[in-house]
Length: 213
Ligand code: C5P
Image (tube, rainbow, N blue to C red):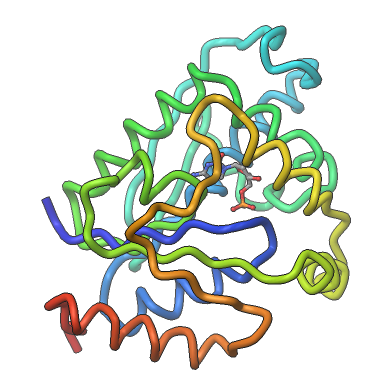
């Protein structure tokens, strides 16, 4: 198994910007697991599956595949790359419902763990430090004031239900969004990406992990 840096946190907290930059600085591959849940959500919406109550979703069979390409994950569902639909408003609205479905989580978590055998990774999501790679000693938790996060999304021109997603993600039975007790918390409302990356690199160095370049 290669080293994995686990990054969890709330919606629109800037996890991706931080995680991608950290991956680049370490020379690790970057994996955004939210993109996988978003991809499955798009696939189901595209097939007009009703996504209201996770217990009642009639899940069709679906095939997923992932690979690492130029330091980033490529995710395919039914042979299609859904990346261009990831930030659609309707995907933002429904993704937290899909993320509660046990069969979806089991399939995606298996894929995420498989990637850990291929390359050193920086992996971001909601349950990476608590479930997917709970044994890794390298964990961060990113959060910021909800108003700052909502403003961030609207600056990006997106309609996103940031608070609603947090409530659903934190209260679900299956792998809820939680800060792992051994994760270092970073407030992205108070610190710039560069400051957060510098803090993270110093923390990793203290734990014996040095940047490859
Ligand atoms: O990180 P992002 O905001 O793109 O994630 C979209 C949604 O996917 C989250 O709100 C959450 O419902 C789900 N998710 C999850 N577990 C992960 C990553 C994302 O449940 N590891």
